[in-house]
Image (cartoon, rainbow, N blue to C red; front, side, top):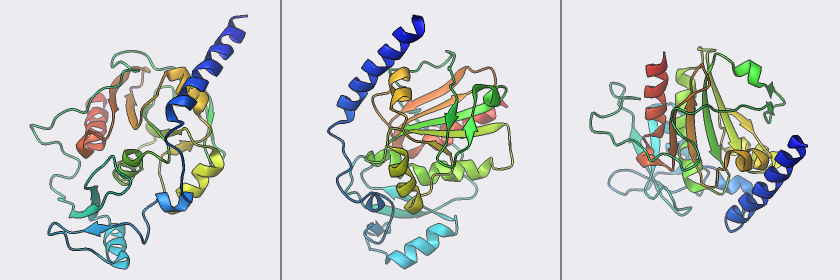
Length: 242
């Protein structure tokens, strides 16, 4: 009986999540949401780069794209050279991103079995004793997309550490996510068709990032773009746990 009540509650919550995001719909071909030839990339002086040039520079890993307006689909991006000495390090006065309304640092996070878009099944048992970095997102969310390159950069920093797992939970249908990832790779384990998870956790705004420690306790949670510093705060949290 309790299972039926829980299922019914999740269905009702999912309907609420659907309504909350109903006005943020995919209104153009999914491929156009990724960085492409139409993306406006400028330098600090406002001069525009040709697609081939900025794409080549970003591919080296020595440059990043910073959105002029992180909450706008019409935003231009400033091509910025990375400083290897400060890469991933927070400034002493860096402001911590806003926390969510639906997660609480210090509380326990409940994991469920999930299957990513590549068919890999991730169970709660698999994550036991791991540091888990989570991201809640959806395709039509500008700041979700704009932080992905830096989140990918973060994944690369831990690619040889099997004790740190990155999972991205998407509100979109799996087939939509697969199309999007072909033009904008996301190096997390990406989970599609996740409205029930959004509903269960009460997530109704994105992007959301979490760091869960080896005991399943939330050590960091953030909501929004956070001036682009969220990946650095995630890195700091992982370092503090270790």
